[in-house]
Length: 89
Image (cartoon, rainbow, N blue to C red; front, side):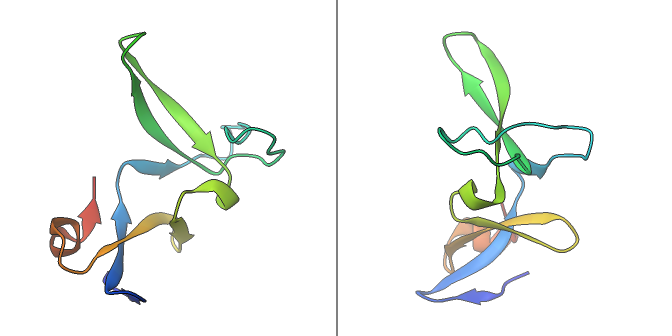
């Protein structure tokens, strides 16, 4: 996938994020947001020496978007390694 984005950027799959399944009911991690989460990413907590899934709603995906069939994409610079690979890690 390499759909052009304004400013010399392209959309690529973001493999660090994943969609939540229907049985994973979580609230968006963004403070004050009442929405249910739709996607999450694994974040390492150095203090606990463990990784946790942080979940967010569609309004708080930090520049990412969900496309069919359930793939999360992020815009990257057209000349970046991620653009060459076709995905971000």
